[in-house]
Length: 397
Image (cartoon, rainbow, N blue to C red; front, side, top):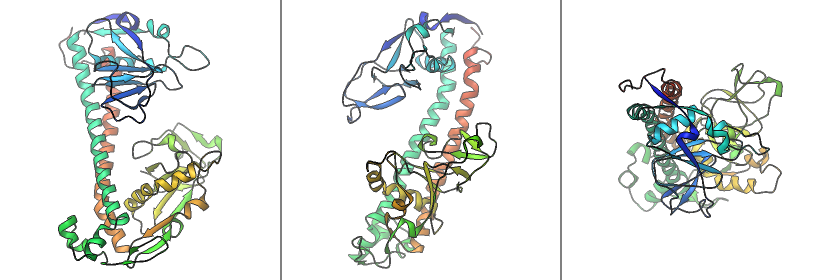
């Protein structure tokens, strides 16, 4: 396979993004990109898609791809080819060339046009560009599909939680003589678990037989505590260690550090709650791990992992109060955490929810595992395809 030896400066121009207001609150159809990726939406596009975005300022300057028209703010560039190039191949070539890691040495980390200009670039023929883009793009497309599927599945699960435990829909329907089986699609067995009337409580009207309580009385809570600094390592020695929100993935934390002297633990399936800003951000421990002072591990006393995760999500407004309380870190203490109000259902309803929604959560976990495997495959193939050491399936140029 033959490649044309070139440089980035010979093949593309780094175009500056433009400042724009309101992208963080706008709901327009076009993505707005900053130095670290998508930051909002706008009603106008700066350039047509597809396109490649390169961060310009900041400690982390990522490389991103957009299939659709988009806007780039002034902390990033977008790449404009000087000849006909496959944009998706260009995106993977930028990753392989580590353009997002180039630093010009200034006090504020930044990527300059001059720093990129002379970076070597191997340019294959158009058909090879297309083949590389198709191979790697198909993996990323599946990862993106899994992400969208998981967002839909989680929205479904949250809707069920709100219906049962916030709006009390099954109880309201039964109280007016309706049938939750017909109106909500509940099985007769599950519908029978809900009462048909309400009672007064300090938290307002709640289902008969349920009780107004607090997080501390209904959940097992472990506040994190950072182990000695010398016990941290990135070689995998000890057990996984998560310090805070920076270790979060979409649903499960991402391994970065391990610890040989753990002090506080989260068990597999515990919900991990960020106790520093952003207070209340959630992940789920997919293995036994050590947690630092930025996290807490929590689980309902029934053992219901799903109930715990979605219950913590419904406390977001109350967590926000602590984040905005004026403390140095914008944090919630154990005393504040355990005192949060919680309407606790009967054990039978809690277990029924865990059984029903647990199946959804298992599918989410399976999709995440598949995406992780696909990402590993992509990361293995990318440098080999871009260097020409592995053929993408096209005829040799």
